Structures are given as structure tokens and as C-alpha cells.
Length: 135
Image 1 (cartoon, rainbow, N blue to C red):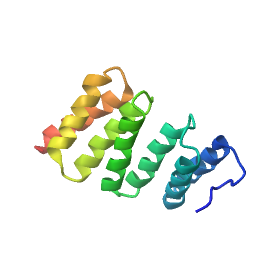
Image 2: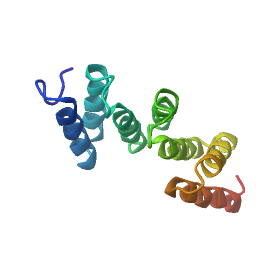
Image 3: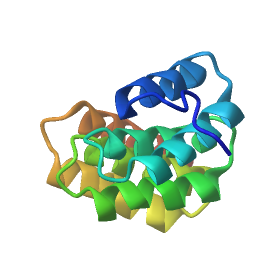
């Protein structure tokens, strides 16, 4: 496939892919983020592109694929600001896949490793939900 902006910069191509995501054109967004990551692997936007690629799968209930791609954020970009959010979404994916123990471990990790973040607060809410559901 071709980049959304073939002669454009990494920022140009990232922006187009992100706009597709905001427009809920998830399949096109995913393809655009994948092409971005191939064309610009060393871009300062690569961690965000990887996160939004995973998010495009999450938004279309492709939880197993999303889980793998959120994990790439954590493993390949450990210093990224997206790591707490990627961990949170991994917990959500595990929950959606009825992998209760994995969901609980991941959501607890968000709270422990990133306590002063929105992701930690949301993880706590999900853990309470799981407790009330008995899972």
C-alpha cells in the first residue's frame, strides 16, 4: 500500500491517519498507521502511531489484534507517554476477551506503576466493576 500523503513528511502522514481515526474510518486509519510505521520507523510520532493503530483495532472489537499492538507500544516504546494508556487498553481487551486474571493483573499494574494518571483512575473503576460482576 501507499502512504496517505506519498511525498509528505512523517507529520503529514500521521495527521491524515489520525483524522481517519477521528472520522471513525477505522480500517483506513489502521492501514494508514501501518504504512506510517513502515515508512517512518524512527519518527518521534512512531509510539503514538503504534498506539492509535492498536486503538483502531480496539474500536472495531478486534481485541486480540489490539492486545498485540498495545503490547508493542509497551515493549518497543517503554518511555512513551502512551504506555499507561496502552496498559489500560490491554486490560480492557483482556476483559472483553473474558481473560479475567490477565485483565486484573494488567489493570492493577496501571494503578501501581502510574498512580497519578487518568489511566490509573480508569483502571480502578474497571477493577471495581469486575469485583461487582464477580469476575
